[in-house]
Length: 66
Image (tube, rainbow, N blue to C red; front, side):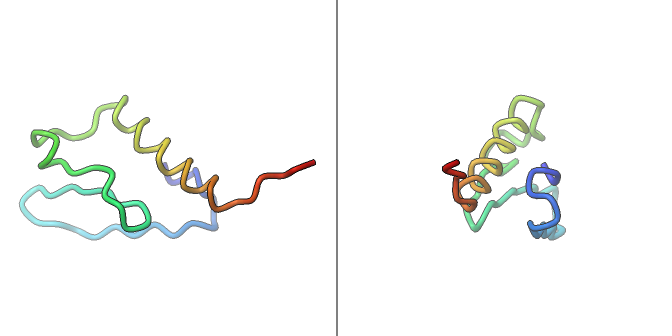
């Protein structure tokens, strides 16, 4: 997921307590382990989160009209 934005995207990781794992993109929560029955994200779920990150990044970059 980190490679999606290259060097122009800041990643912030904040340690939690008691097994908390939440993933936010631009302030929007896209994953919460507690809300997903305490399970870590499997490969299909990671791909969904990666797609959200990719879509957000693409929305920031104007499309090349050439």
